[in-house]
Length: 249
Image (tube, rainbow, N blue to C red; front, side, top):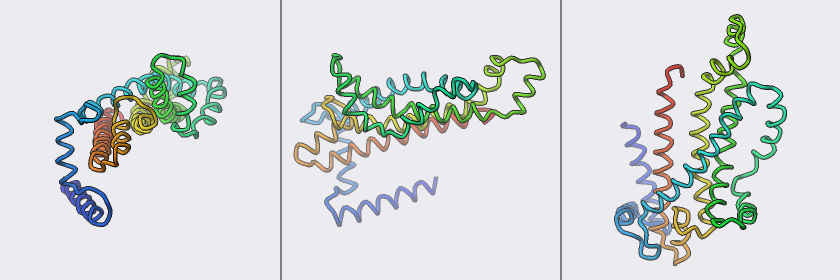
């Protein structure tokens, strides 16, 4: 606890020094404006910072849930069945290095015929960002299941499906939670970038971009950035707590 307080104080001091030298609002100015934006709607957009944050969070959760529901079973199957691995993994390794942001222009073109083009495109970008970290984490754990556990199961005449169910999947739980934590973090970054590049009407990325376009309202921009950091920290903190609760971790 003492280390965290010290780290916070150091950050505040460095922030004050930075504000003194360049055009960055002081911490107390940001704090006052941050509290104000939490309570009262911003005049231009007509929404509070909480409403923008909830919009971003909802998009991330929806897209990440879809990504994890595919990445987790696919990662386990690729880790256990060689035939599936030889087909799927090469495709993943080609697509995985492509930054999710690079998909944004194509997504807006591909999903243009749909009624909610911007919303669907943003979900797709988050899906791409969340899918690959989760898949890789689950795949690595499933593929590296200890041989002694597998051999012991075979001694008791367990077939492949029984080994998959009772050994590979439980052993991969740590990889699943790690993949969800990393994937959710990447997805959170992706939604902010996607919101900045399209008129979505709400969201923290959209809020920051509008504040920039209406005259460079630096204090509001920093408030939006602070909200992004706070939410990202809380998501990571909660998932780490869940990871530590696994009895066989």
